[in-house]
Image (cartoon, rainbow, N blue to C red; front, side, top):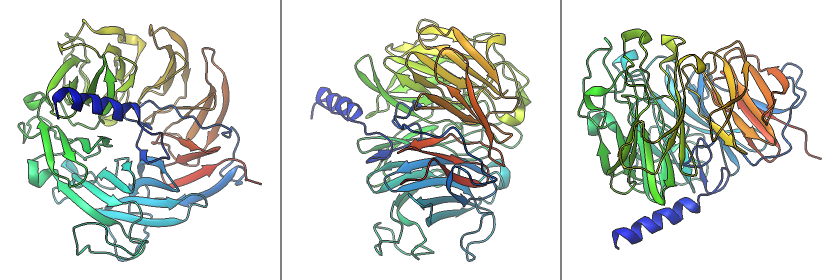
Length: 477
């Protein structure tokens, strides 16, 4: 096959990407990572105390950062082990749970013990922070042990061991069915800082993963500067296809963002938010660099503890047409600070810093963020760690409105059914009318902090609070 024909096939695969709930599902619905859903008939009133508007709820662990992800008749959430489901599997673990839709019955779980080095590689009680990628009956995620894991979406409930690997520790109907696992520490000498967190994305038979390679416990040295920060694996086998260590000695702290995939300028691209604050674009099939963009002003300075003006990339890039939208931020333990929000032309080559910046918010206009944008009907919705929610003109960056939730925001907005849903650390979900004028429809408390992004399908809104999974909507006749 010629290179040209291969590129055409990749472009066709992107154009045929299926929505969440179909054969392919991931955080952000598609590889473009745009937080917009076609769901309609979603609720704006519920009460988790009285149960009004709550179709069902299910207990999770004590810390939940991944999902909820909808795929077919199932729902997946990453959490920790303090909501113990299996008395055989005790202690601090990362846990991926699968639930049935409708009804919320617990189906199966995949668990991972903690890495022996402790919090420098695997922070206590943080669980699985990777929202899975699903293609057909295969589910892919990154464990707290920095393993890329492929499991069967049915677990062992179907009575079959689907993987070439045998001898799983647990093979009961509530256990995960492992197909393959790729250990990034063992195979690539990766040194994850605090936690491996990437939510993978896929294209064809390739799976793209940020490795979370970072600094040591003293936050000064990089133990593995030549280990890859971004990799492509073969979905079917877990074989390493290509790797890239672009940040190298330039890693500032950790690398906790996610890749995005799209076609810009007629060319398939996979985007990697690097640990040096640069956004990199690669050819998906080869790993060849297409362009890179510095997401911090050139006079910015990195200082330990977040006191400087240079920031990481924790937010995920969003691709809309030939444009990329991306904000910068830092570890939330570093606190609030000034950030930058960029709109980048994704059609260039080489170092496109400056020349391909279509618009930029910085200084006092925008704060550090971990939130990923949602772009719909010419408007961009995004939040920052300080608790502000913004509506901007997606073409120009002009602010339409700003709303202060008075609580830190870790998650991202979901645009669906003419509304914008977003949760905050106080446990409040704020619902806005989507549009250029500020209209708050409701603010509803979930009983505990919200660190995740809402999901929606078939008239039901799914929310994962710190410790509980909720399905919200009107009962079906």
